[in-house]
Length: 181
Image (cartoon, rainbow, N blue to C red; front, side, top):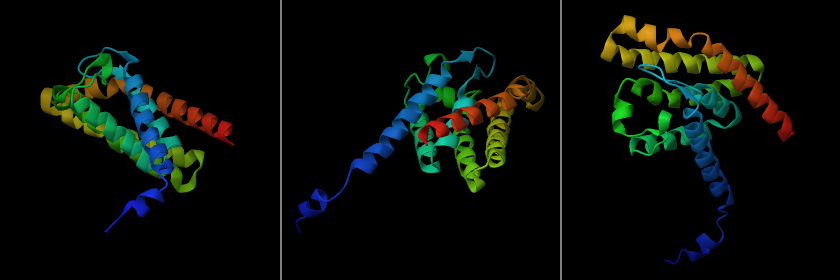
């Protein structure tokens, strides 16, 4: 059979736009990783805010695609993590639970914020996404340093940052949406 007639009639523009959004989202996450404050055992970065922002402005499939690509880049050693680091050791080390929870953070934010498309669903989506992020991160970290220390170093320093990042992500997303109208 000759399938050339099918290929000629396929509109590849939507697929290319979709892939471009995923690549740009991945680059955005990598850039936000470089805005960091060194902190042991988990650095303080702008990534949670960037992931929530991405979840608020992108469809779930785009948000998950961007995070999936970012995780793949990190796993093969590309310098996309904080301080231009990368590789499996970082994904399996003390920050691994946080990094791997980027996927639920972005996807939960995206899904829940679209339920009613109100500021309250956006707040709920970001909050639930952060519960997944810090729950996973602290649980993972506790295997290395114990639960008490994991809470002390993996949650408590971020308590004030979480609502600030939620507000930053929502205001940024709403500003972008105003310009799109």
